[in-house]
Image (cartoon, rainbow, N blue to C red):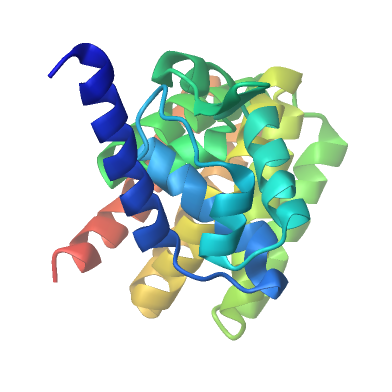
Length: 251
């Protein structure tokens, strides 16, 4: 069997797996479901680099979707760097090219908790450090007001508490006076929301109490313009979040 035969057989196997995993998707959910599933299959290499998708008409018939819906998904995938579209067909890009252009939130989706914790420690300890250097009275007051509302909530509305938590972190990133750090934090907002909500929900009493204490320590360090103290407090806070998540994951 020559190289072309091997490639053709692998392509057929991936096409079979493509149809198996996607199943029949209704028009109502095609935009989100088809796109998310295709991204998942590319990222876990069910569909490997240089895989060529089936003919559009065949694929639409197999999945039970319209051609326009499939093209919308392809357009989004191409814009995010997952695939390339030419006259000869639609093909999965090399992983190096995908990683260079893929939105950060999709990379985080495939990282484990240890990796995410290390990434957030790297990012957020620096925003806290710079916020302690640059934050003015208005930013400090805004942080204080957010924390006051968090204390008033105290777990009565976990969704709202999580939103306030994220606002606190975003305000710190804004106060860092570094737009790149701020925008990077915005790019991982889904992970911030997930970790915050999960932590508060899994172990409400302990997690909320600890979180409020850590937020207070971070605020005090920024108010005092103590950069090292702010960095240390943020590091302890992020580590505590993922300690709770990992502990519950192992139960």
